[in-house]
Image 1 (cartoon, rainbow, N blue to C red):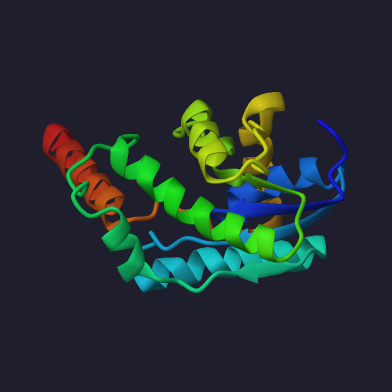
Image 2 (image 1 turned 180 degrees about the vertical axis):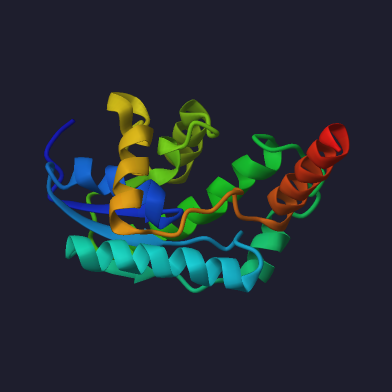
Amino acid sequence: MPLLPKLLLHVCCGPCATASLERLRQEGEVTLFFSNGNLFPAAEHERRLAAARQLAEASNVELIVDPHDHAAWREFVRGLEDEPERGARCARCFEFSFQRAARYAREHGFTGLATTLTISPHKRSADIFRIGREVWDGFLEIDFKKRDGFRRSLELTKQLGLYRQDYCGCEFSLQAREQRKKQGMTENG
């Protein structure tokens, strides 16, 4: 990977940004960009934003907060509400955030854009890379899962005492989580 003098890192949440930021800071200047129109309810958005702010402060890096526009996100994914996790709705969700991040990056002279989404074992990096390339040619294909990135993010999250969520973020993933819990209680109860 070439040295990156000015990189914008799309942040889905503080925990995923921990190890991603740690790795990228070795390459150049990094600015965090919190953009998550999908987050639901609003209190969840605030909890994740607070964790991103806590990380930015602890790491002494700038955090840019994209306005939370859940209504625009809902319109962007309309018709895909019944898609399963990792399906077409998720791809469209990534596109929504990447478009906003890429616009900010271009308007503010960033030389590259990456995303913390690739650190999650629940996300397919190849899909994220494809969408990122379609949105902006300055998108960098960095798979943060590699080099034990997810494990490192767990360690750093614990060290910093960051809030760690237990669902992707949108109301559809929240409903799926609740359904799994209910089925687990039924199967075990």
